[in-house]
Amino acid sequence: MDNELIHLGIIMDGNGRWAKAKGLPRTAGHLEGLKALKKVIRGAIEEDIKYLTVYCFSTENWKRPQEEVKYLMALFTNKIYGEIRTFNDLGVCVRLLGSRNGLPEKALEALDRTVEETKNNDKITLQLAINYGGYDEITRSVNSLIRDGYKEVTAELIRSRFDNPDIPAVDFIIRSAGEQRLSNFLLFDSGYSEFGFYDRLWPDWDEEMIHTVKQDYLKRTRKFGGLV
Ligand code: IPE
Ligand code: IPE
Ligand code: MG
Image 1 (cartoon, rainbow, N blue to C red):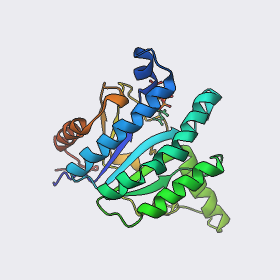
Image 2 (cartoon, rainbow, N blue to C red):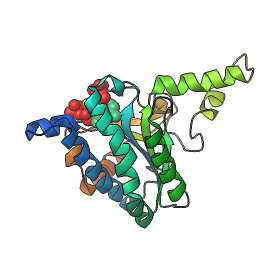
Image 3 (cartoon, rainbow, N blue to C red):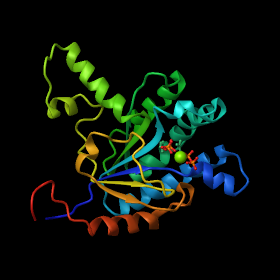
Image 4 (cartoon, rainbow, N blue to C red):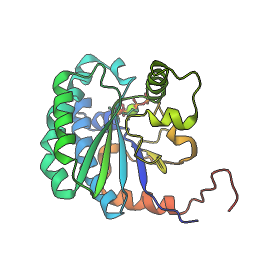
């Protein structure tokens, strides 16, 4: 079977540890993490990956110190839109994944503007998972079906009410910084995805790491419950 890597999901972890090791505040790790993301997007385009979903902020990350949450919200408000030229030069179409509930108005405005101004790019789709949680994704979908009068659901119906049902399920979920867990990322669509765990801290990632990731994926055999 053809093992095409169409959709890569990344749990970008280790920003805090990277900063700590350098004697810097955790926020410096987040800023460097954004630089790493730009390199990774380039690597993904080089590898002809069509969808890249990156976990930027989980529904559980609100538990972090207020100062860190504020810094991350400011990153989403200012820095992402600040990359609009890069996105347009590279052909990156930005989409949002996650709950709008609780996100500052200013961040939503900037993110919506980024989505709007990149919507015609077709080299790669970058799905930003912000205020995203797998439990929340499934619950929101089921509640919307209940509101529409459904008494029974199917897996297809549940998926059809996700934020971006047109985006195919993730093929390969990878995580940086050595942790081996999902942390509520893509719970539903990870049903049959492959997993890869890498020790390197997120701010140290670059194009080269994505070439390695692609090679690792190509070694996998996907059976989806069947036989090959
Ligand atoms: C990932 O890095 C970024 C976010 C969760 C926003 P962390 O901030 O979790 O870094 P560590 O795990 O503390 O090193
Ligand atoms: C997962 O990382 C969330 C993001 C990468 C945005 P965390 O660092 O928040 O996850 P846990 O708490 O270690 O599971
Ligand atoms: Mg972490």
